Image (cartoon, rainbow, N blue to C red; front, side):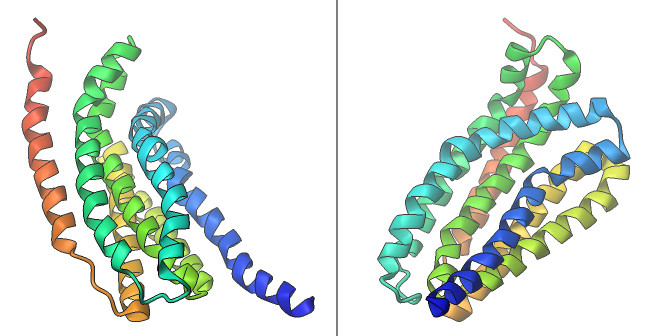
Length: 238
C-alpha cells in the first residue's frame, strides 16, 4: 500500500539520520581528540569512556529497551498522558545518579586493578563528567517517547543532529586548552543541551512538567560527594 509505505518512510527516515547523529555524539570525540592531541591522550580518554559506558550498558540501555515499550504503551496513543513518565523520571534520576557516583569513585581502583600502566590512572577524573552525560542521555530516552507517539520523529532527528553539532564545536574549542577534560565536558554539556531542548519540545507537545529540581539536586550532591571522595586518591595503601 503506497499510503502505508509513505507513512513508514516519513516516520523512519528521520530516525536513520538520528541514529547516525547519535553514533557521532557518542564516539566522535575520540576522533577529534586523536586529531588534535595524540594517541596516548586519546587512549586514556577512551578508557575513561569505556568505564563511563558501563553505566550506559548496564543501566541506560536496559532501561531504554524496557521503557521504550512500557512508556509508549502508557501513553495509549495520547502524547499528553505522561503520568508514568513523570513518576519514573524521579526514580530513574535518583537511582542512576548514585550509580554514576559509585562508578566515578571506583574508577581509580578499577583502573589500577586492571592496568599496570600509570598513565591510565589519569582517566579517573574523566569518568565523572562522562557518567553524568550518560545519566542525562537516559533522561532524554525517558522523554523522547512522547515525541514518538506524536509522530515527531523529524523533531527527534533535529534535536540529535543539533546536539552532535554542539558537541563537535565544543570539542574543537575545548580540547586544545583542556585536553581530554575538554572532551569530557563537551560530552556532558551536549547531553545537557539535548535534554533541555527535548524537555522544551515535550512540554509544548504534552503540556507536562517534570521536576527538574530533582536532577539539579542529584547532580549537585553527586558532584560534592565525588569531590570529597576524590581526596582519598592520594591516601597511602594499607
